[in-house]
Amino acid sequence: MPPETLPPTPAPAGPGQPATTASGRPRIAALDVLRGFALCGILLANVKPIAHMVHTGEVTQPVVVASQDDAWLGLGLFVDQRFFPIFSLLFGVGFSLLLDSARRRVPRPRVLLLRRILVLLAMGLAHMFLLWRGDILTVYAVVGLLVLLPSTWLPRWAVAGLAACLVATPLILGSNGLTVVPGLFLLGSALTRYGVIDRIERSARVPAVLGLVFAAGAVPATWLQIRSGAAGTDDFSSWFALAGLLTAGAYVCALLLLLRTPLRPVLQRAFAPLGRMALTNYLSATALVLVAARLVGGSPDDWSQTTVLLIAGVILVPQWLVSTLWLRRYRQGPLEWLWRWATWARRPPLRHAS
Image 1 (cartoon, rainbow, N blue to C red):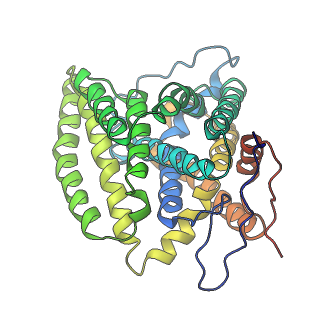
Image 2: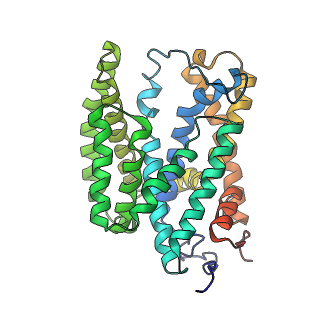
C-alpha cells in the first residue's frame, strides 16, 4: 500500500484566479468569514469565564463563578449560546471537506482524520490544564472520535437524520450548551455531503428565506428565554438553547446575504484573516484575556459590558492585524500549519511560493 502523501502544493492565486485551501481545493470565502465572525462572538462570551481563572489557586481547582443574575440580558442576548453553534457547524463542515480531499489523495483517509483529531485532543488538553478548563477543543476532539469519525461509514441520509435527532433531543430534554455539539457536527457534515456547502454562495433566495424563518423563531424564543429567566422557571434552559440556535442561524443567513452586497470586501477583510487562523487566535486569546484580567483587576462578575467589549476589542484588533500580515507571507497560521503537519505526517510548505 503506498505511503500517505501530502496533496500537491497549490500555486498562489493570481489576479482573477480563485484562492485555494492548503489542500488545493477552491477556498470558500464565506466559510472563512463565518468562522472569523463566530470567533469574535466566542471571545465575547468567554472573556468573563476565562478571567475567573486568575482567581483560582491552581489549575486543578474548580472555578466557582458567582451568580450572574441577569448577566445573560443585554449583551448576553446577542452573544451567549449564539456563536458556538456556528463554530460547531463549521467544524463538521471542515471535517467532511478534509475527508473528501483525503479520499482523493491517500489510501487510508480515516487514519489521517483520526490522527488529526488526536492532535486536536492533545492541544485541547494542554489548553485545558495549562490555561483554561473551559476549553472547547477537547470536547470537539472527543465528539469527533465518537460521532464524526464513525459517521463517515454511514450514508448521508442517515447522517442527516441523526443530526436532526441529536439537535432536537437536547432541546426537548431541556439541556443546552455542549449537548447540541454532536448534532451540529453531523449537520455540518450532512450539508457538505449533500453539496450545500459548495453552493453556499450561489443563491440569495435560500439564505433570505431561511433567515426570515430563523429570525421569526428567534424573536419569540428569546422573549420566552427572558420571561422564563426572570421567573426562574425550569424551562429556561430549553428556551435559552432554542433561542441560541435560531439566532445563530439568523446570523449565518444575514452574513451570507451581506456577502452578496458591496459590503463583501469589507466583511472579507474584517473576518476572513481571523477565520483562516481560528485555531491560533482561539488559543492565543485565552492567554491575552488572562493578562487583561490581571491588568483590569477586580472580580470579572463586577465588570460592565463595556469593559468586556473593550477587552475583546483590544485582543481582536491586534489578532486581526497579525493574521492579516502573517497570511500575506504564509499559507496558514502557525498552529494551523503544525496541525496540518501532524495530520499528513509530512512537513507542508509554509511560505507562499515566490
